[in-house]
Image (cartoon, rainbow, N blue to C red; front, side, top):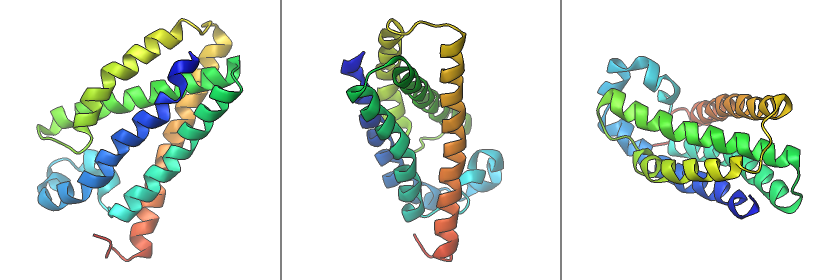
Length: 171
């Protein structure tokens, strides 16, 4: 399992670079999306590239930190938390593919989601061989996923605060 651990932050950063680079232009060129899909676009109404980069940086910290800890201090709890983070990232790829299908348009994050989804599924399957799935494991994985969802909300909060701090002049 150790051979896969450092792939998690690498996959995260490759994927999120596509988002940082592409979303500003995407929203500028598709303002009608905010009216057509208010639920999908709600989190990105107040968007700046700087805010997105800050949110991605904040999200990267747990992916990188847990991966380093699991790599250097391998153990049941750290590897199970890492597995939960990988499961979260894999779900993130699926959500982006679903969003693109829902709005019937390319979204920045689709290319890396399509490329990295099979890779992350393969790593999940191979890593699952090393994890004993009992109640405690399921609780740790569920907690990891829940914490990453909460972290995503916090990252979006930071993105909006960056917009407000710059008074919407970012892009």
